[in-house]
Structures are given as structure tokens and as C-alpha cells.
Image (tube, rainbow, N blue to C red; front, side):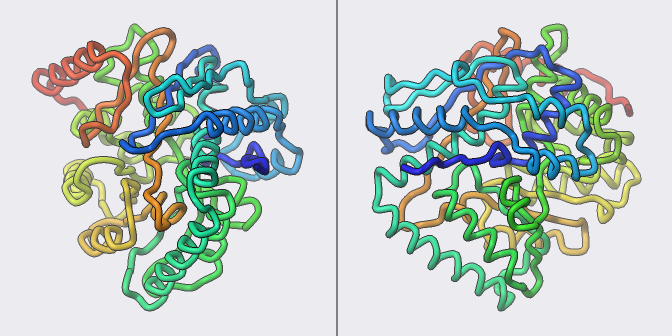
Length: 404
């Protein structure tokens, strides 16, 4: 099989925005990341595992090229010190443990500095996906169905069946293949739509190649590691520590806050006037999108902030029909935008993989996500989840609310 990841730019944009902040503020943090496949019937053969191992080894041989570093340097919130670090950085294959001793046939775990292990997540998942679909299916038939479905979606955007405003492609981690993702981004960027506007993609390598906008700010790992990696912190205040560190790095730039790492209700305790003003918007990734949006609009209004001046970014398991319904619901009440992943990057006649790779330990201690949708987290220690829930519950029940 040809090499799947051919550039270190081939990752999501938020890996660089988080990576820069990690480099400047948390370079000594150590993390463990654990892979999981949520599909019940999927099994990886020994041949697949060996090909995945070979592809990850090839990925670890890559280095940033000067034209790639120059591209990153052109992004206004990137700093020269981090670019110089990336000039020296390389993936380390010794950080990976890969074997087939798992009920579904594939075990992957990475351990090392947060600076390193954070960068492995997206390329690893992209490799697992493409190896699986090329080896478990007739890949060329899947590509035919992918292209057919993609054209059907584009036609409905063109004729105004779906009107969703601004949207981006977020599918790198679960794409059918590199060719499929590039085809989707290329066609979406070349066509014009009635009531919709394609903005860009999270895949930085494609943004450089196709001259579209790189999209992405922070992921759950940022709140989990910043808030829970320091063992002196009360984890119920994870959002405050994470938001404070983000503002320290970026000021008013690059500011879309993720709300559901330890529930949105807990997030809102810390997202008071200062942060709500500094951040340009918030991202939804679990729970009912209409209920979440109503809650965010009410919160902005209670703070005296016009919600129409802020962006509600939706990114949870979206297709165009769901995005259209959300856009219609919030029309005239707030700016909305959408990050659409698997539906754009891996919609074929075969069921897509639901695979994740999550940070499970930071500095030798368990970390966890308590999202607005049960079952979306990944933690090795049920006792830690219960401890985190108790911390959150105590804060929500007993703490007087203050404005920060």
C-alpha cells in the first residue's frame, strides 16, 4: 500500500494551535493516549495490524519541509519560536505500542511528552481508517459510491435544498482515504451554493495545497490536560485554567471555546464576561444542539453581549439535513457555522468506522471527559470518573457564582 500520510501538515489545524500553547506553557507534561473502535462488528486482521504499524513507521520518518514551515508562519497567530521548534521536531516511533492482542484485533497506545503524543492522534486515526477500508472492502467500489453521494449533496447545496451558511470539512480522522478527502474539499471549494458557503477544512496540508482556510482552535485534550494534569487543581475548574492559558497565548485571536469537556453547565460558570467577550464564539460537540444553542444565547444575553456578534459552531455528527435544521432554528438569533466530518469524508455504501484516540492519563494521573452525551468519553479508571463527577456536582450545588 502506498504511504498514507505524506506530510506532517496532514493533521487538523487545532493540533498546531494547541501545540504552540503546549510548547510555550506545558512542555514538560507527559500524556498517554488510547485508541478505541466503537463499532461492534469490526475486527482487524493480523495483516491490517502489520500494515498499520508499517504506515505509522513511515509517518515517523517525515520531517517538516521549509515550504510547509513558511506556510504555518504565514498564519497570523503562529509564533516564530514554535516554528523553530517544528523545524527540529519529528515523530518518535518508540512512543507507540501497536499489537493485535485486543478483542477487536487492534491495540494502539502512545506515551511520551504531550508535545509529541498530541500530534500522533489524527495521523494515526487516518491511517487506521484507510488501511481498514482498503483491506476489508472493495475500495474502488466504495470510492464510486463516495463520489456519487458527494455529487448528490453538492447538487442539493447548489439548488438551495440545504441552506446552512458557513461550513467547513472536519473529516480527516475518519476519512475513507486521502484521495476521498481531497476530492470532497476540492469540489466543495470549486462550486457555488445558494444559501451556503464552504469556508475550508481542518486538514492543514489540504489548505496549503488547495488555498482554502485552515479551521480549528482547541480540542477536549486542552481542557483535560490543562485542568486535570496539574494534580493541585480542582478538576471542576478545568475550563477556567484552560481558558486562562488560551488567552495568555492568543489574546483575542484564535478564540473558539469548546464547552462540553466537563459539561456545558459547568463551563458556563467560568465563561463569564471577560472570556465571553474575548472569545469570538463557542463550539458544540455533544448534547442536543438546539438546547445547547438556546442556553448559549441566554448566557450571552445575561452578560449583556449581543449573541449575533458571536458564532455558535456545531460539529457533532452532522449531515446537511441536521445543519439545515439548526441554521433555520437559530436564523436571526446568532451567527452559526458548521464543521462536518464523516458525512463529507467517508459517506459510502459501507458503514464508517467510529474510532477515537483519546488522552487517558496526564502526568501519571487519570484524566476524563464528562460530555453532554453519555458514552463519548474514554477513561481507564471508573473511580476517577466518579471523583470528577463528584467535584463537578459539589461545585454546581454549593458554589456561589462570581464573574471573572
